[in-house]
Length: 323
Image 1 (cartoon, helix red, strand yellow):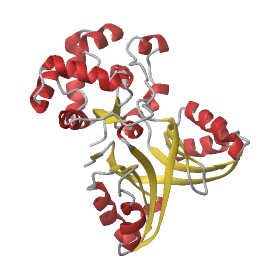
Image 2 (cartoon, rainbow, N blue to C red):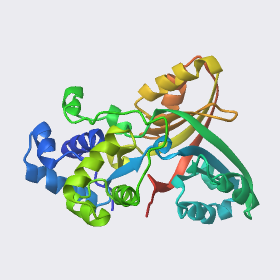
Image 3 (tube, rainbow, N blue to C red):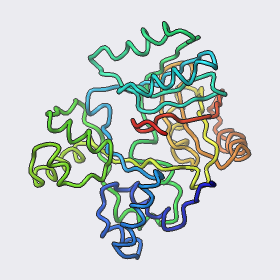
């Protein structure tokens, strides 16, 4: 059965939820000019179809973690099983099969002071059928987190989105101490960022008043943010790819900021390794990807080299397995 495309109201709702994943339906309805019941019904249907998920996530720096982009080259007949093993790990945020299935690309979060590097430098190279492993530390994120393709693509005006946009707070310089109750709160929000305060109170043992206060504190400190996971195919994006760009060091910031403005870019970061910039892109089809590479990317004079790899399949996204 063909996928049902999002209509204009769906897209507007998604754009609002990207701006503030916990915005009350009444406020969303006011911005969209429809009833509360219409918003609630529409969100419930999209959530039930698996087309949309609001996720409460922590910024790595705020909880004493680093992010690593890990490239695993392996025998094609072993890629799926190795990728599924990575999906099962708690320290992977997302897992893609790329380059025709001969490579796995994943984001790994490791403790700055812990032994999380073992998955990068110890276990994977010794895994049967693994040919090579590359690990690249994410040094700075130019686009991502609470911002996605919906931030730059959608039917709402900037003024409409700004009416609901949650303040963007930079993560703290030092890790935020988290109690066991905090961790239970964050675990619940990671599964469903719109979990109600009553249920969050039951999960943490706090009162609803304490839940509201702690949620506000975690957001204001830059520890907690809300992201939207959505089925890009229903927006018309059929092709996704990874880009590894080599740029003159003096131009990393300028190129990174330029990538962040491109409508096709869903994530852009400076990294360690031979390529010092990484980007994820969404395009309508392979022709649109070609047009993007030979147009906006080619126009960035500081880019010395680009390695492109299509994403064949996503097995995990925003910390949750897919399918």
